[in-house]
Image (cartoon, rainbow, N blue to C red; front, side):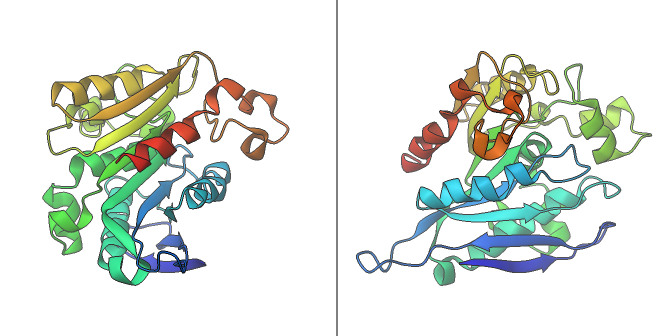
Length: 271
């Protein structure tokens, strides 16, 4: 069942209400009370747009794994931080409070992000217990906490290996290095950060692989569980790395990277 769950309207939005679009699996006769993981997908797009290649095709994959899937149509520029992370936090809370109705396993609500969408997903992962996120929504921190993160070639650092365009869209053209440091996510990992599945390619020439390596190092330092896969070749924005999402652009069809989706299926099954 595909349905627009809710428009999310928060203070600070400029580009209109965010939307949470749900793909909720029906119960089956052999397991009518089965609770399923829920995956909330944040497409990439440099905080200036949302990529359709990282939206519905990804949702279909998670549905095939037996997960409920949700697509987060979040605010982008000229809206700035922390608008989108508050929207995602509210989306997590909405899914959690409808756990019984939608048969969601509320201990397995996973935020998934690609590129700048990975920055958004990880932002909630590190900032979920900060008042600027939950208190601004009139929520409790536990309501907005994601249980896990799936991060595909994520924008993470605002330091030397940053993706300049994403941070400009997120913070504005006048942002200083101090501003970028405040959303450089490796600096905010703690023992409260949820576990993660991370993948990237060595040859990503838009978001350097150091972005994921810095995050993994910080997670290791704080004893946060993670699984990471670094593929030797592949451009940025691969999505499923197949013809399904690459179309006629052969750069986006990278067979050696296609395994990530089956690996993440195993990760969720052993969550």
